[in-house]
Length: 398
Image (tube, rainbow, N blue to C red; front, side, top):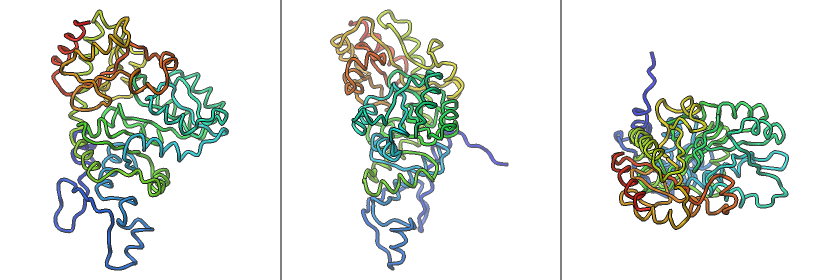
């Protein structure tokens, strides 16, 4: 009788597959070698052309391979491909779709600003019509767009950045697959702790491992989990584009992943407390958090996410605030630090209009609901009462 291991056990043991001829290391080693040599040319040729070993770091690295195997296990994937950053992973996946006007990309309208900017840079000529956007939470609009466009792929985020919208992945996957379209999911905010998009119908799952997977603000990395028929073209592409992660970066993400479940459990609990406290504060006009009953996809989050967990990101709006007021609020914080990342053990506050969504322009930001008073809080593992106390004193100074 088999026993399905808990996510807490899986994250600790996922990477313990490194094989050594002289004893088994508990921790996968860092292998910094750029090139490998063999006793005979037949073995070198097999390593180069058949994947039977390592030959050159751009073609593969043992530490990166351990990371890929670990993430594939956590996502329930056949394979995974690691990159030097989350944006490199996104670029690789978009590039591999070979988008045309006849088979374009259908993307969620509310995305991380840099992702929107990347798509605009990759496909700048609007006349080509290779990228279309849709409100991914509007089921009728999504179905109509898929039927009309017959896209090559549908791209969405499990929890959108920074509005924290949640798409119905199983339903969207069913509609997309009926039109012979792939479903690509950026699951950075959710991590495998909250849900596994591949089990819900997605075809490719992308993570910026810089954030929750690494979890300590000391590494940049990206990774794509998928089935082998889709990973092999990505791996071949990686040989020539060279966006590989370094061995130390791969090792740091592996180390961070061992505590992913513990960190996410605490961060989700903290975020829920913070969100409820903010929702009752007079200086806050709205709070966006999937764990609040008034969130438009609260019921969907309850159905899709790990029971009782709603993520560790909280977005809120300062009442009647402009840029100078937001700056004053952020500068008054002591524990929570301004920062352009998320998912770390410490709490970070970001001003999307200034940073993550600065690229898309104010008019488009406002259309997406990203006002001048909107801020995004990545809740860390500090004591919830200390995070709340810091918010309280900073809001009191406004």
